[in-house]
Length: 333
Image (cartoon, rainbow, N blue to C red):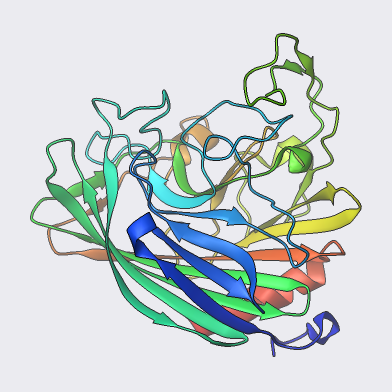
């Protein structure tokens, strides 16, 4: 049982349904879909998509894989939950595919293998291997990632532990805001911004008329430092909570940084339009040039990034609950 969270009820069974021929591994909590690990050819990176609450509500945007009416169709490369970066030896792994096809200067994270699947009660694990490839297919980084899925009552948790190892060349993560651990959320969890935007109609095509972005948006950010709303962008925090309502369901989506991560506590590239990202390596944009990172790995060197995603259904998480979950996360890895 996760410490301090007995209010969420009993542990549940977590299983996997493998569809490797379809490039998909489903993660099931008590037989109901929580998320899928997928590696579509036209996304250029493995992602977790969709991501659902205890009740089955999708909290990730459907576009571009399964567009839903009322969604934005911007930033086509922002799909589900992912980890990549915008400037790796000058290559864009973050924005590759932003026009719907592979960019000339875009890098690809190639899924290689499902290393292991271990179902269980209250916790299950999925371990994978990937390669970060340049446009010629040469590997710059080899990736090993473990996804650890936890559940208790209405609480859903994903711990992602990713180790990147430079191959036979020095790898420079040049300073940029475009990174690193990202989620693109459902329309209802966007912040109610006062701007006119184009949304998808019932046929999945852009509507001819623009609407006010605030309509239907219920989200708000709150950081571990007490910063809220759009003001969280470019600030550092140990965790960030995005909370809102879809239908009648109160939802919190929180992301925790880890004390062992590079650049802890991370900067947040969290936008009101639905991009929710932690960026530990892009300091310059967030400090207006006062600080830079330009993180470097020499051949054979490794770095590990650790993140926890928390999905709460039926209530909004309190600061105390998230702090308890961060403490639990910090002690595990």
